Image 1: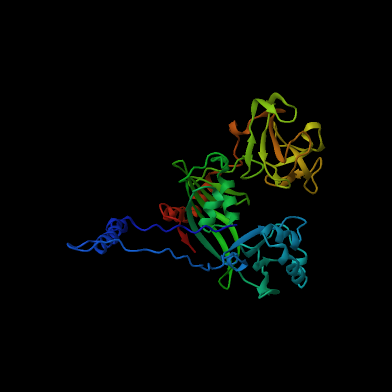
Image 2: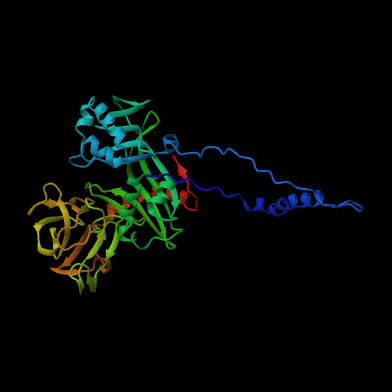
Length: 435
């Protein structure tokens, strides 16, 4: 993660003095070189003198300069993660990693990381770890502190305090660039993009000047941030159109995001199996195949991504096939509720436990991007099928997950009112932050 500081521009009223200030040195020069009457102007003899001049040594940027900038990052623990693999994803340098792993052996919790939980870390731009916090249980906090050039581990029973955080920002170049500038964690930015993915195509629809506001929960201990939680409400203004979402859990335990009027925003199918990845080849009836060197239909969507990027199931399903299939290479085929199915090809490997008959939920990782089969480079080939026929998912009007009935809708309207008021408060603010 990188933190972008807003650039200060002086108000316009200051600039009216610039012409006058620029003119003052000019008048001074004219006065110094004015020539009075009867002044003798004979040529003055001149002599060229050459003397050696010692220049200062050029300044170099050292580690201390890079360490003057640091940032907070939050990383979710994946199945099979070790402290070493987690430090790699956080961005800790190789020089630091060995000492941190050695210090981590003091803690059984750091030796057996629980998948699904998160780690909060403070890291410098050069990859030096300053602090790491890991909530190993609901009330057990493990802290790894830097003390000069060594690391110490502390464990304590804690009671966390939940606080609502309100922030807003504006798109200048990218979504994550804007959320970094507004000091919004990546986990919250990802939740926001996921929530609005049925309304906004974050691959193609973002525009400079789009605005967003978020209200999310954060958990503190003794005033220190331990972890971020769920996005509670959000607003995204895309190309002048306002989209709003509010979180709600019904009496049956089902949860999701809804418009302020109570309409569900959750689609039965995700827009993309890889969030924020670039579409390298779309659904078309005629494309020049880079391997076969011939024109043929491309009945899917290709997402360019590095090898090893996780691939998600777009909806609840049962695995109908996981293995090698001709030009597809390693492929997973999922059967959703009829008549829908989906396919994920060119995978480098399958996720643990993915085999025929396995049930998966929407968002579960089923494999990892690769370049197996007929592929010139790492990417995911994704197909969405209706009654066995490939269709363009970008053009389909897919069903929503569930709706609220009369009683639940009344509960929602009552519980969502304070969250909607917070969005109203943020509307029109400039990079607002309320902790």
